[in-house]
Image (cartoon, rainbow, N blue to C red; front, top):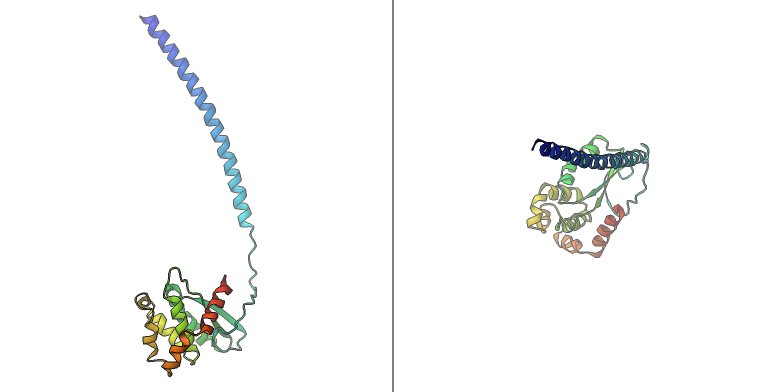
Length: 196
């Protein structure tokens, strides 16, 4: 009986050793593959760090066209804002734009280009139309402020700017005609293409 137990223990030890030896070989192979993968990841990370960056004095030529210009149109510095009347971050930028124009009235102009994100902001395009119709009567800045002050209400009423215009726009009949004019739609479409 003792011989059987010793024989079984010896077989169990040999079998276990053989199994662990096989597992150990597999673990070594896996470890080697992990080392190779880590080297490849390090190489990719190094390549990403070497991407070129724009110089600090970069100048980009984006045509102003018929876009709205706030401030001195002859100012040597141009700040370009692509805006969506339903985007919270654009709404927050209004006070920043005002501060820049107040602090640098002769040095900076702000060019506003419309970029309504129509897939997520269904009323932003129409708000852009209203703002440009106001621009035709010299009331862009007032409409820009009024829409952004109420931008959260646009979702429930895309014609909210029409209500806001009653206190801003001198000729409401012309304003209503201008909102749907092909030239305003063409301008918005052009400005959207300029960012893409």
